[in-house]
Amino acid sequence: MKSQSPEETVEYYKHLSLFWTDLIHLMSSKPQALGSTGPMRAFAANSKKVATELIQINENLIGFNQFLTEYYKELAETWNEAQKKVNLKAPKVPQDVEQIEAFKRIWIDIFDNDFTELFDSKKFGENYGKLVSKELELTKHWNNITNVILQSVNLPSKEEIDEVYKELHSLKKRITKLEIELKKSSGKN
Amino acid sequence: MTHESSVDPKLVEEILKFNKNVLEAPKLVPAPDEIVLEVTPHDVAQEMDKVRLLHYKPLTDKQHKTPLLISYALINRYHILDIQPEKSWVRNLLQQGFDVYMLDWGTPTAMDKYLDFDDYINGYLDGAVEFIKNESSVEKISLQGYCTGATLATAYTALHPDSVKNYIATAPVIDGWRDTTVISNLAKNMDVDKMVEVIGNMPPEFMYYCFSVLKPFEQGIEKYVKFFKNIDNKKFVDSFLRVEKWLSDTPPIPGELFKQWIKDIYQDNLLIQNKMYVNNSLIDLKKIDMPIFTQVAVGDHLVSPECSMPLHYAVGSEDKTLRMYPTGHVGMIASSLSQKKVLPELGQWLLERS
Image (cartoon, rainbow over all chains, first blue to last red):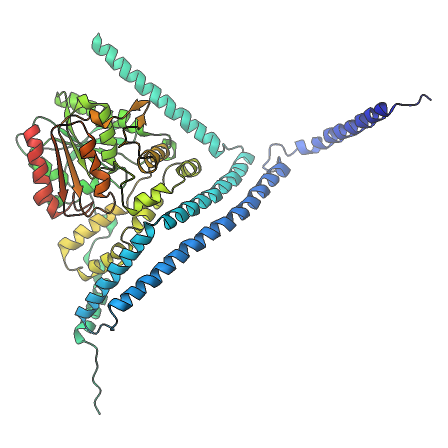
């Protein structure tokens, strides 16, 4: 028997591996074909996509909670500060209608001023922006999961619907332009 | 030994009365849903997609020649300009003999997310102006913009100065960097690209959040306490419910339009710097060379005077007037002050130029 070179040995095993991989794939895809029109088709691939999205949702939830905690911390701190100012300005417990009215006015003015100052601050604005951004990330993942489900039942995804909207918008614009040009040229004639 | 109560009997009486008012409120006042906000008769003169051009029926035998088109804001609906007969902006102008049209921007749906400044300015607004010019057989019209509607109207006037005879900017959103309101702070920190990419149109709920941070205690608590205290006052209650109904009814804002508005006005502040483009055309405020009347409310917590006033100084007009009123954003257009002072001044100014 003729001895083989190392390259030939590698080639032999490569071919052997590919042969069986391809054959097993061909054999196993036959029973899979039975479910190709049902919602469970591409189940493994879809499950992987959904699992990936869920893992990312968890990562984003950590960031989201961080900004949400900061948001409520800022609100609570402002509330406490405002209440201290009210206590200083109106230390006595109101006894009659007039005093209650005056107390209420002081309370509302101080709280409105302090909270407006908070909402107007750079710190609040930046945290709020990040909080909304994280919320949008969560929505994005939810959209992606929904897309997987939509496509498993042969419905268009959000991106595909958006494409149609975009096309419609551009067609409408072109029609309007053509109508204007038509009007102009019929006016000239 | 006798025990004397230190509680003021008037206070007890007040609490009991308030309690009674809360319980009796449903019997005394209509539900907001039962209130019809449109008060002044009008026709729908033109429809463009979801946008309607309203034409109000005259209230005088003779009308001034130049018609007036009102470009209402993109937030909430046009009803505030015709909220009730005695506070109606539109009715007052009709009574002064003006021929009034108004744009109702409608309710954009998901498929409208690609509508942008170009569609609103060169599409709907221009379409309405051309329609009115044709209907009234005039070369030019008078244009009024309110709030964000004034941002659109300002851009339109700069791009189509030949169609506008007089321009009235009421609380216009112009200089985003100078705006000192809470809204501007939130807008400056928005990731608007991501927002539009993920959710498409700007949902009304997001606008409600923005409103809720404006004077949260006066607007969130005191306002309703006043409402229940005055439940017997028919006039007060009617006015309150109408404004509340108007406040809680805002349509979504098309995504692309919102994106450009936040970026170009609040984040990059392009409009006032004459650097903003609409469909490849530069908006040069110097091209606004017709008579212009700018109305600003000193107590405006939605569009601060610092945000609106720069328009007066940026335009190319020689005939320009700036008026400041001691009221707020809504007070300027729907209050007894607007009826007694704001509208008569506007009417006089417009009459001299119509």
